[in-house]
Length: 371
Ligand SMILES: Nc1ncnc2c1ncn2[C@@H]1O[C@H](COP(=O)(O)OP(=O)(O)OP(=O)(O)O)[C@@H](O)[C@H]1O
Image 1: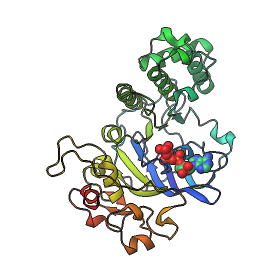
Image 2: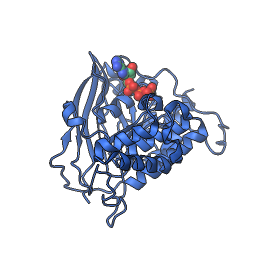
Image 3: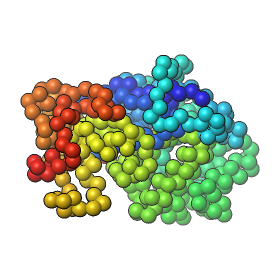
Image 4: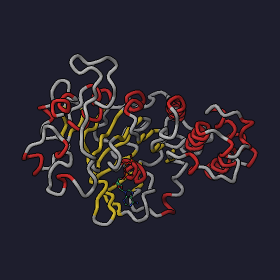
């Protein structure tokens, strides 16, 4: 198996007229990993996710590079059951492992790609799980037929064989084959989201991008959908890019995380490391919204708050060339307002903050002290 990244994103920029919503993000997604993209509303997560699929809004100007590694797994996208198993000898490279000198010859550039390049990749190599399951399913066709059509379009099977595959895919996500004739409106929200997960996974893509896949679900269904995504991901060996506000989901299900603020990199690295000891004040503030298991002495269950509204593309110290988070940051000083921090390697992750070394042992407390 190859160990160069499945997807390489470099200096990705998404703009609407003069307003840049994604401002130079660079990251890799590795084969078989769960990569989480987190940040407040308006941070540019969805636009980033859609750019990975070549599905950014028409009116957006996209710059930079999103390169998808050529298919390498046996039968990739064929969904014919002959693909090398995800856990074959050599298996999925452990998230976090490095691969010096790896190259990605023949990678497909998705930024600016024509529909004729993108269309054959959708479903076969890259798939999408949207927030709203209704928007992903046609209201006028039975769910099973829609899955069968997805199988046929990629695998070229007979109608009968495709229907069998579709029923199997539904059963894998806990929907009885007998319900394959039902229409989307006859399913509950949780069932619809499971059907959408089945649809995304049915052709065993290399990469699944899930944009807030559980937001519309109640807590029980949310956990069930996340577990299913994880199981299906593991069974197919796909990598998963998970866009979410749900930090508990990231803690429990993701391998690596990228924290974004106002379209810029804040902190990225292995989830365990970043969550155990964030090095950027913004990450610390976000994580502080996770309630502690036990009351913290002297704080009780009070949650630190970052204050002020999130930075929009046209606000903050961004315009002055500084750190966009400076107006809300308890550690900011003149340097932060004048000089934008670039990502630098610190303690097993990358951090974009001039003052990472000044964060206290319990970083969330900097926000309490300021309050
Ligand atoms: N079609 C569009 N036209 C103009 N501005 C847009 C468009 N789509 C998104 N934006 C702006 O780009 C910024 C980032 O949007 P994006 O949807 O990526 O945020 P997000 O981090 O996914 O937020 P949320 O968590 O609320 O979905 C926002 O300020 C948004 O208003």
